[in-house]
Each structure stands twice: as structure tokens, then as C-alpha cells.
Image (cartoon, rainbow over all chains, first blue to last red; front, side):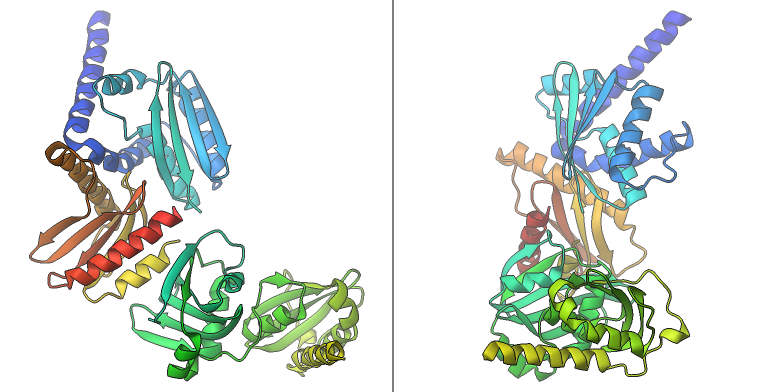
Length: 154
Length: 219
Length: 117
């Protein structure tokens, strides 16, 4: 039974990766346009089903810290996370996140990732609670990290 | 829509109207959303000074001009509704001749805070709301409505209220010209004792001071 | 932040709605005269159409660059152009709009949006 569960999980991950690959293959840069909707769904799920709470937060920086902290410390989405802020430019650096394999697979197939649900969810949270728009400028994938550059608009 | 050549759009500013200094002859074009709709405002500029103004209501196709329009622009500035300012080069004299109603009578560029008499007088001409005035040792609050000072009181250094507070400010113009500053907004509520009867006394007094300084400079 | 762009385009005869949309599908700012339009939802679709059109261009013309994406329906047109590296500007018009005029205004304002981001 345990083996079956392991296999189901492995199969589900593979199927998800293939779906992602299929979307990228057909839509290319158009896949980026899905980012906000996916981020919104992820944020809603995190808030409704997992109790992620932003009450009383309206500062974009605070929202960013809170989201990252919960994703890492509560959900174990990545082993570690760092946020670098330079004015309105923010870089989110995640060490060994759960979706690293899927992103590496895309890159191996010559497709540059254009959406990153966690960053999109952060962007939606910042828009929802502080009213500020966030643009996701670049997603970089290497052997152990995913780095996302974001720009918070005034 | 006014004729003109688009030069630039600026989003990084502390006070949009200060960008008038960047325009030799032309206008600042701004737009904002308010309770009453989407508006476009034009502040016509000549040699860094605002000489004309027009505000158009985009969806209703109506407009206002002159001092009334400039008051509305300044109100949008004060409420931080302006996210971007477009700079245009244009024949301002030509626009003013074609649309005489756009002339504004105030001189200088009003600012939400400042230290000079000209910008304070310009502020009095367009602003509605509280203003705090202070020099090193004294401070006052006044309430302005469409160019008239409706209430005043001393908040530091003395306890004058109403017209007496205005006279107190005028007595201190020497200090104010040296070390004074003003900021829009007043944290306290005004009470009936603060009511000013001679609502144009402050403006007239300061205009006299300005004229006096001009004459002195001339000699 | 983009009220100037929205106000200028809304004054063009036949223009009924404008949206500045990030390429992630986030509605940065927009206004539509028809209140039944879910502008946020349309923003995500427009960003996807634009991005996918880039992919089509890459596949067919071997160049990932397009000038403009136009969707024509008997009830109106939707015109989308790139507004810098991170956003698109999209305009909803009446079916019989002066397309040449809209093109001039949308291009000019896309440049403004690009310089503001």
C-alpha cells in the first residue's frame, strides 16, 4: 500500500510536469499570461485551506516576508529562502524548492520558465493587501536554486 | 485636448507642480481618478510659472478652466492622486489667446510645503484645508477655503485665536521670511473661537510684504 | 499611475475600454465603459493571447516579435501591443472605429507605459 502511494505520488508529479511541458510547448511566452490566475488560486488555497493569514499587513515587504516564511517553515516548500531588496526591486531566492525538478526539466528541453506560481501568489497577495502591482521580471533556475526578480510598482 | 509636442513622462517626483521648472514654454498634463470621474488637467507653464489651467472630465466631455481648474488640480496633487506627469512643449501665448478663460491669476507655483512667500501665497490662492505655519519658536494653524482664511489659531509660543492669530502671524513676518516654513494639513479640529472675520487679511498683509520686498530690492 | 494613458485613449472616438496588463496576466490598471466586462479576467486572457501570438510568430516567422495583435468580432475589436519588456496595452473598440487613429494613439501610449515601468 505504501509503495502504491509512493508510485501514485511519483506518477502525479510526472503527469503534472508533462502538463506543464505541454502548456509551455504550445503557448510559449503565452504561458506567462496564466501566471496571475494560477497565483490567485494558489493564494486562495493557502488562505482558505491552510490558514495562511495576512490580517493587518499592508506593507509589501512585510507581506513578502510573511508569505516566504510560511511557505518554507510551515509547508516546507523549499529548504531555505532569501529576499534581497534594492529599492522597488526584489529578488526571491529559494534553495531546493519542490518544483525545482520540473523547472530544470523545462530548461533541459530548451524552454525558459516564464511563470512561477509561488512568486505569482506573492504578487497577488501584495496587490490584494497593499494595492501595489508587482511585475515578475525574470526567473532563473540553476542546480540548487530558483531565483525570481520582481518589481513593485508605486 | 491642447496642442503641443510631447517631451517626457515623469513618475518620480515629490510634488508634481514643481516639474513646471522643467518646462520653458508648454504645459504639464496630468490625469487622475476621483469620486466624480476620470479627469485630465493641464497646467500651462511659461518660464517655470503656471499661467493657465484647464481640467477636462473625460467621460462626460465637460471642462472647467482658469483659477477654478487650478484649484481642482492642486486638490488632486494634495490628495496624492497624481501618479505621472507628462511634459509638453507648446505655444502657451497662442493657447491663452484662443482660450482666454484658461488664464490663472495667481503667481508662482504652489507647493504642499515650503519656505518662500511666493509659493505660500500661491497656495493660499488654490488650496482648501488646514495649513501649519511655523518659525523657530512659534507656530500657527490656519484653515483656508478657496483663497480665504476662515479660521486660525496659535499652537505654539502664544495663545491667539481667530483674527488675533492672523495679526500675530503678520507681526512675525520678519522671522517667518527668515526661518519660517509651512505644511498643508492640520492635525487639530478648529473651534468657533478660531473663526476669522477678516478672511482676506493674511493674503493682503503678505501681498504688501511682497511688494515692500520688491521695492527694497529695487533700491 | 496610468490614468494619463487611460484618459488619453478613452477620448479617442470609438474606444470603449483600456487595460494596462502585465505579461503575467495581472491587470495593472484599466477602465471599460461596459461594466459587465470582468476586466481582470480579460486581462489574463489578453496577456496569454499576446504571449501565444509571440510563440506563433517564432514558430512561423522564426522571430519572436510582433507589432500588434488584433481580434476582430462583429461587435468590436481588441487591439493589443507590447508596452515595454513586462507589459501590454490593450484597447477595446467599437466595430467601426478609425483603426489608423487608434493605432497611432495606442503606439504612442504604449511607449509612455514602457517608460513608466
